[in-house]
Length: 286
Ligand code: ATP
Picture (cartoon, rainbow, N blue to C red):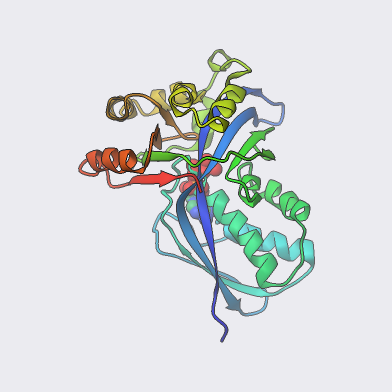
């Protein structure tokens, strides 16, 4: 039996998340700056009986049935490519679930690119992107090689761009899962940041101006997240004090991160939170 194909499936942070408005289709129009970070799951692919998708995962919060995005990715690939091969996925989960880090979306992208190799399908990136967009708004970003991308539309239209620098973060994910749809439902138009806000942050990152970038991080969902989970405000304030600013929520929360100057700062601050929270990470751009 051949050895499994193992794909690293990375998490993302939203360094900026600007919500422009609600669309007629019920989704929100947004502009967001994605950063791929070093925290990752591993997805191993091996053969299974004809037409079967088997998923095993070491995390009890992850469904292993047809609702798993990995399962949906495999079904979509079979349908689009008219193949009926079987596949077994073994998912080693490190990315906290329902945390605003897009773990499920990243796994779906890893499944798409993994199956393209495993089943020797020869799909081009535009073909993979078309499938990614059917699976969810955040999936497309993970099909790009560069760690930074500007997402528009529902977040599925990506313009990747190069930033020569790598950044460090402390990331704390409290065990207070938030449903994306609830957070968006609590958003209102008065919370939208000015239109130049994302571009200004991109410019600071490109210049490696961390002290300015730290002041420019923002998330238009911050108020709804705090409203739905008031207890997160104390974590946010504690992080803000520990890192002297530069703190933000990722996606629809509850993950809170700080942009810090280097690895030792990230490790130092992370250690301050490990006594009170179980999911604390020192992570970098990846
Ligand atoms: P998003 O911001 O895209 O909603 P998230 O990071 O907040 O993502 P996920 O970790 O992707 O949240 O999980 C959201 C829900 O998706 C989970 O509660 C889980 O039931 C479901 N899910 C489906 N597939 C997966 C997967 N492969 N890994 C984790 N969760 C999954």
